[in-house]
Length: 138
Image 1 (cartoon, rainbow, N blue to C red):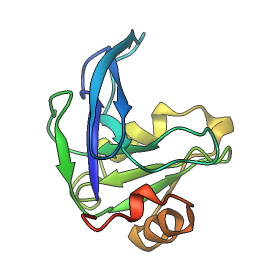
Image 2: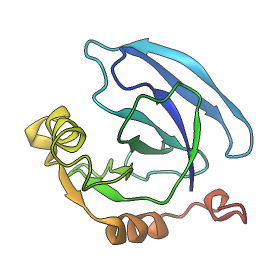
Image 3: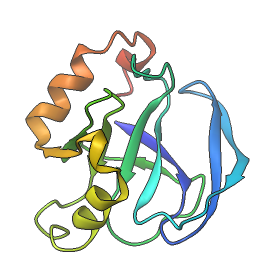
């Protein structure tokens, strides 16, 4: 699965992906009041029914430049009560004490952030009606 970084860990400048899975660009979006605790972005070509936007993704570990395309297997799912779940990439065990705790703390308690494993991430992604995401290059 391929995602694109829209917001680099440790920065306040946020960008947004515009385009399809095959073609698109990252454009300036806004400046946030707090720096991102992880690399944040999306999975172009997938749609989250909770908000109609591309599925959100986070990459644990070192900072990645905005616009970086990352191909990886989902390691987990950050489940939120409002359905705006985030797919997590990176080694969950390696980052359990730092990145994951910061990620969970980033969301207000009423959003009910809960960390689930790779099977739940795969099942949720498979449940989405995303014909573009089912392209052969996946």
